[in-house]
Image (cartoon, rainbow over all chains, first blue to last red; front, side):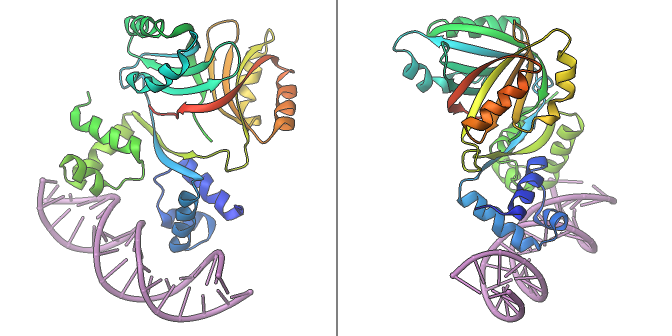
Length: 141
Length: 141
DNA sequence: AGTGAAACTTGAAGTAC
DNA sequence: GTACTTCAAGTTTCACT
């Protein structure tokens, strides 16, 4: 479905999603119009889902990053999933197999904020918290 | 350090990092030049670390997504961290507290690929694998 | 925040396989 | 038909002030 040129375009956009069509075209030896058509196609096919920002959350005032595995109480899974948007601290959440149902990445201002966040989670289930010490690889796909 | 306008610009770029200065300016009532200056400042301060792509990995042929917690064998932590780039399947990796040292998100083509990946990890430590059933919240910051 | 030259985007028309 | 290029008008960027 995707040829080598499409993959080159994707790799360039992975590196810098604000790259211009002209710049991408120069990298891979293609006219800006063609680059644009191929990117349009990738968007239409749903292969490119969006263009996102990578931020330094520490510099934005979020001093703590944690990974939480949450084992939801019986019957609470759907409730929690529907109320996920009430937790702006959660930057990533997955439904996973295993004794814990949800894995999530959370950014918090300080220790007190973490405590308050965990207290809120305790209404839904039983969380296990791992402090993130460093990001070895940032989100890439 | 950051005022309300900066936060509005960040929110707009979070939503679509390819948005033009003109478009962002219209949204928040600012001239394109000022938008550009502020984004430049955010980049220089390291608050904006980059512009990334959100892809549909399933459509790219990666049918399996897993979360792996890895407990490295004694003395293997630094070795593994330095060899992380040998594992293109890893899209995200963190050093975490707890009995497992590393948490990682991995995309794989199929079950056989997962088996081969885990076999490679077994040289460095003891992995615990959780299948990702669904993405409730995609990476946002 | 405004200005203008340079660079980029975008759609249409045209070419090649 | 599909994928690419070229062209020109309209936008955007960027270095000025």
